[in-house]
Length: 479
Ligand code: NAD
Image (cartoon, rainbow, N blue to C red; front, side, top):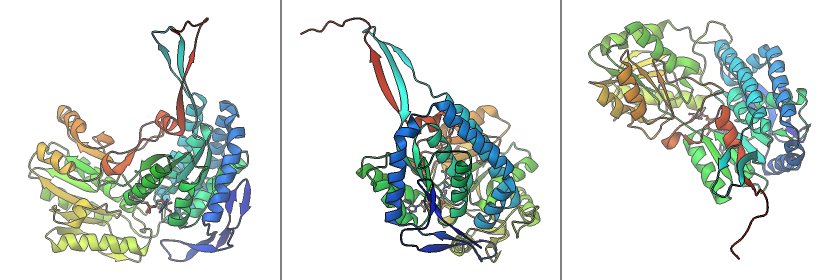
């Protein structure tokens, strides 16, 4: 067990109150670390530090900012095992998921390094004949708030692109995963980032989060988290005239049409439902199956689920590790029990040991069951039967969310038509709903968020566009 301090203005500090909180290992239930418990006073100090550093950092030439991101990527590559251990012990990531997240994050850093060196403006042919153009400048001081499920990459989406485009940042990792957030602070410190540009503050989101967003020094907030948290932050940001960007929850459909190879359908559904124990905003939370082969599909998926190694995330072959905490286990179990009580067939799983919930398969899930609409965030494949592609589409859109979708079919015309009509920010044809790439627009519609992150979309979020004109010669005015 180790003690962790916060990073404010280039210094590692305790909370003003000297209070700490325990950070638990989700698998063992033991305390993994004790961490500084920040409050409003610490939020104020972090925002002041970021605000004071913003002019000097914005003046640093883009290639120099970009070089810091490249260095951070190289350092992370050398420290992969250290990052992996934190993700396993603090977030309950399996070894495989941790390495996947780390390599994606290294790619993100390098992609951001390239993108931020090449921030673009436009020129316009206007009637006046003036030289007319846009330039982009950093928004100022960005508050980045991240969740616990993919705590490294989701924090880095904010840190890398905001810092790379010349903003200063206060990063607030989730209370379940503070150490990975602090490790990001350390990484940038080692990469040579000037003090105050990236500050990392830990403690309860409800206290610190509000103080950060309400701070007069906050220019914008970028939050990834639950829809309820996002709506709260959006209201607060709007009240104080701050920009906001939100990546929120999902109940993502995986539509499987009846022409699909059975083995491919089973493997895709298993990956979509069980990766990281289903604790992914883009998990395939509703598997919408067309046609008569549904019982065979359910049985084969259950067979696969029963064979997946589950348990200790440190073992390299474990596929399904622990849920983040006891209340998540209770939530998932209640959703499964409610579905079974209302008529769903439990084909696999439905039990748990400690915080590890067995990979579970439910057949004949219907709208009266809580699991039909609620984000599960557990390793549960919920199969819904439909008669044709039109019913599949209406089931897919029967949700408050609109994050991601997967569509499996050999009929590309049908796939593209469904992709156009499904209400989601991302659609993956012949894949599960799980995909992310640093250079592509990640984000949702409806209650799943506002804005996009990745590549030029992150640059647009973290920079302000300014219209600049240049009059050539002396202009004549009407009076
Ligand atoms: P959460 O909303 O509980 O917490 C997210 C972050 O918000 C944490 O850092 C938390 O401390 C902070 N927070 C809590 N209350 C706050 C407040 N009043 N003001 C400001 N910040 C506050 O979410 P979580 O449980 O950490 O993560 C799981 C959720 O995140 C799921 O709903 C999942 O779908 C969503 N998620 C979305 C995406 C996406 O890209 N769309 C990605 C991953 C997770």
